Length: 120
Image (cartoon, rainbow, N blue to C red; front, side, top):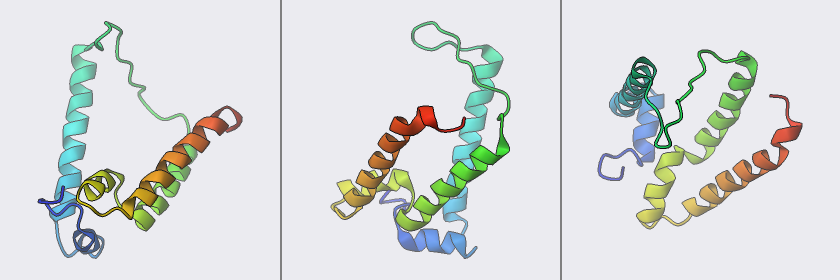
């Protein structure tokens, strides 16, 4: 991620200003690989390592809860950057990113603790 400049703040800034296709290309290729993989799993009815069928729901039950979750995720992304890049930055010696990683882990833990009380 460092060598491909995905961890570069300047590359992300170029993407949001529509000045470069670099990050858009990486995101679009990830979406293409993911959707192809899901289609193959559904078509071939692939099972997991324990022999259980992999069940992928067809559609979301509620658009609004995913929109709200995406909004929260987007705020975190705007403030701290792409979550996958945090590990690369920590490994590269940018230890300040550990604060963002800690915050992400704490947010996940808080969600897990409150999950039964939230509307799903």
